[in-house]
Length: 275
Ligand code: ADE
Ligand code: ZN
Ligand code: ZN
Image 1: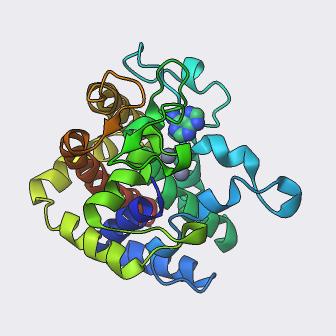
Image 2: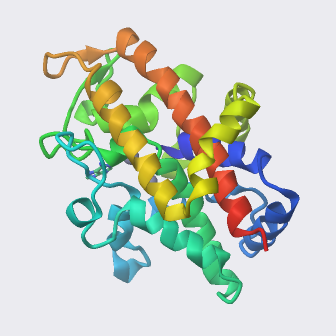
């Protein structure tokens, strides 16, 4: 997702934390003078494109997604993530660090920041799919309501932020900057749509299994939605303007994925910080 998507997921999660988890989250965030999860939600995106000798972490760029070709139906670790450097494997790894009370507070804070981010990304359908080596739609250039962002608009960026920003009238500034009040308003609007039954149903994989099982099934859900919605609803003609029709089809799915990501992020944190 883009900065608004990540902030919205974090804001929804913040509202679903148990008092005990919230206490530890607040203490860890305070190490960097932050108060709430939305403030760290996009941090991993700010370090990926900076060279290692300038304090960045280009090796982590791959942690945000998993390329499962659309010819396959489900994730296969040996085939899709042989080096374990993908979102399906990294999310549980970071959860284990956060849950480890013997790890240093600094280490646990970094893990928390990764979890907030990756719990969002694993729910973005195109972060778990690719078609014809298109890098999750990054190679599919298109025009959206007459705008092609000087050739930079593509299917992936449309799902990360194009549609959200259009539907909620949000505007991302330089260096991932957003208006946190607008993000919270949007999170509250989405949060109000979540029923108690959904909350219970959405965290079943986490309740009944471990975080790795849950991570695999959430990526599989994303992959399936990429095939049946993100790619399927695309106009057949190359470079076509995807506007109203594509937005009407995809926006409800984006809302659902942001809501699920928020509820599940809270469930991850509640479980990892329960002792
Ligand atoms: N780069 C390559 N594949 C990608 C994907 N599925 N999502 C985001 N970035 C990618
Ligand atoms: Zn993305
Ligand atoms: Zn990301």
